[in-house]
Amino acid sequence: MKDLNTTAAASSFFKLFKEIKPISLWLLLPLIVVLAVTGTKYLIVFPAVFLFFALYLQFKERFIPIWIITTFLTVTSTFSVELRLVVQITNLSLLSLVFLHNYGFDLHSYPEIPRFLSVFLILLISAMIASGLVNSSVGIALAQVFRLIIFLVLLYLLYAVVLKHNAVFSVLLGLFVSAIVYFLVAFSELAKANFDFIQRAQNEVFRIGSDYVNANGLGAVFGVTLILALSLYHSKIFKNQLSRVLLIGYIVTVVSGLIVANSRSALLATLIGLTYYFFITNRKIVWYGFITVIIAVLVILIVEPLRNFFELFLRFDQFSTGRDFLWANAWEIIKHNPFFGTGPGAYKLQMYKHLPYALGGFEESYIRRQYEFVTFGVAHNFYLFMQSELGLIGGILSVYLPASLLHYANKVSKQIRDTNQQMHRLVVGITTVFIFIFIRGIFESSFILNYGYILSDLPLWSLIALLIVIEKRSVATNASS
Image 1: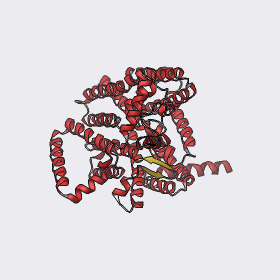
Image 2: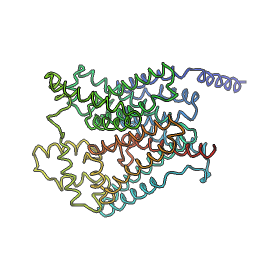
Image 3: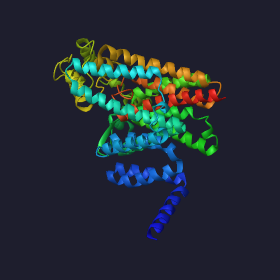
Image 4: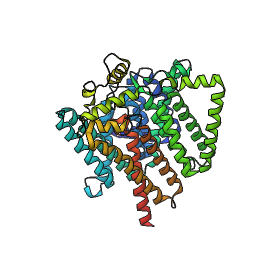
């Protein structure tokens, strides 16, 4: 009798979850953010677990990508270092269980990935191992290879789940929710500076809980999500007035975040990316935008208070921000290690060995700050980063990846252009994100491929997986029609 009552109580409990409206569940997100930002980081576990089960019961396995992306981007390297391993193991286990539930152990049913991507990853891992062996930094190299393989396994599982359930919007929503969390952090830091944009612009990092997030990283997330949100503007998901207002409000939010983050590399890459996006979708906007920018620049140049503000805000007195010092250092390292590089993760071991500046000078002091603060990508240029750590093959792969991705995206765009206009706009948006990230890669090493560092690599690679899903779904639809 007792067992029967327990079963009935459990049944009633889960029935209660199902009856909760989704909009009320999302109200828990601000609570989680507040708890984490204020330092009570372990208390986020309770509302987070409730939120997971409630939303899972509402949306089933389509909710998994939202959870995975959001928790990886907002917990593992921001709210709590102590929770990082827990989140990583939990998410990997969750994805594995869902994958096995969907595909079982039938290897023939496992989704394939495009050949160009397989070639890139095989060459990359081979170059990492070879470079580590040549430079006698095998231990460091294997650590990077191991992390990269774990990341790729996690990414493949995520891709397979998204493909199985056609959870395209779930991936986007995961990125959107993460950007909202970052915006709350950025806004909080601006409030601490008494809404003084100039004072805020002088600080390159934003504090979250007990850790720090670089302003350039926040700028990248805001730029990516802005482009994706614009690509959804004509989607059926946002066809009614309320949803359209919410989307416009979101766009305004991430634009505000982009301004507060004040990452000039992200601002420049966003401007170039949006020019491409509107050139493909609506060329009139490009001309209107061009005229507007010219008028705005003239007004700023003429009105002295505005000119002074933007000179300080955009830090024109620090135009290169020391990147030229880092690039010169990277080039010296490349000249001394042209074929095999320093080995993956071993760049910092040779920074001072091939330093082109005098110790104690201004240039060296800047490089020292980067040496102490940055773990990977000290070169502040993705292409120099790959060439300096992996040698000639790394340099070739750094160009091969953007070229092959843009070619593949163009192929998918042509494939669905006449059959699915809404999805075509999203593909153009994803292509624009690729352009944004690879242009930004001239000034930053992050957000492309830092050997599987989740916070840095997940946004781009989740969108690569999404593009593959769209292509495979399109092929399947054409085959059945």
